[in-house]
Image 1 (cartoon, rainbow, N blue to C red):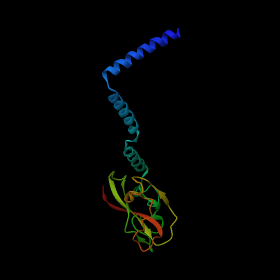
Image 2 (image 1 turned 180 degrees about the horizontal axis):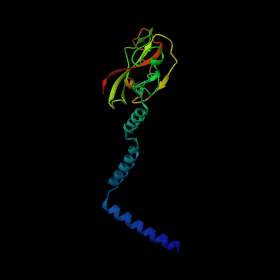
Image 3 (image 1 turned 120 degrees about the vertical axis):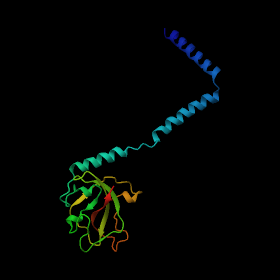
Image 4 (image 1 turned 90 degrees about the vertical axis):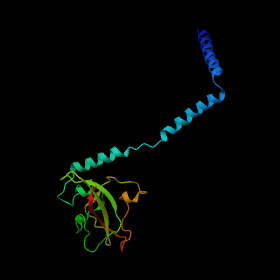
Amino acid sequence: MSDVHSQVLDRVFERMSRAMANHTSRRSFLARVGMALVGGAVLPILPVDRTGRTKEAQAAEFAKTAQTDDPTQCNYWRYCAIDGYMCGCCGGGPSTCPPGTQPSPTSWVGSCINPDDGKTYLLAYRDCCGKDSCARCACLATEGEMPIYRPQLNNDIIWCFGAPSMVYHCSSAALIGEA
């Protein structure tokens, strides 16, 4: 019985092959197969932006727990994109450097939602430089952070460029305006 089935199967494939050969050339067949293979190989490397929803979710998550009263806590609303020691714990304020330090002329930026009014504000995060690290109230927030090749939106860099000293002390969050 297996011989009968294999003969029938052979005849079916032979007819299909001959019919296809009568209607297409080898070159067009190979071109179509090649396009299908190349198209299938390229499909997985096409860029897909999956960051938008993640950033929105992170912003919403931070905004749920954000507060406006205590600038020594990591959930203070201005700190959604800060990385370092909070100047509010080191003798300064949320947007001012402690005595004996100088604000860096360079900064990274972030946008945070103020829970009191529900508006989004643009903030400039500046490192205060000139004294050893404060080592109090360390916070790591990554809201809107971009890779190192986008330095204006990366908070892992010591931003004491242009300051009299490259020694990092703490980070401040100056309000620039409504985003």
